[in-house]
Length: 112
Image (tube, rainbow, N blue to C red; front, side):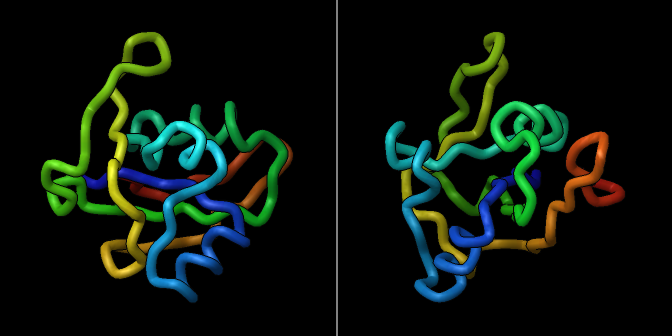
């Protein structure tokens, strides 16, 4: 199963340069890296990145994280994947820009 992380351009650049990061400011504050499932990522983008351009969407294989990935209740009791380890560039399955249009962020076709 793929899970998704939204990064700002500066965070994406830091990940590429350093090979790993501890996450965005909210991740550092909460002590884990926030991920979303395919069905959650649109709301995550709208809720936490509204009107922000220059974003990147990264896909990761949830199984590859082993015990470092925990499924925990968040918005409305829904289970969200939380990574209790650094986010590594080498673990990304793919990454693509997350463009902003008048109606919000444009997710890639076939997001799964």
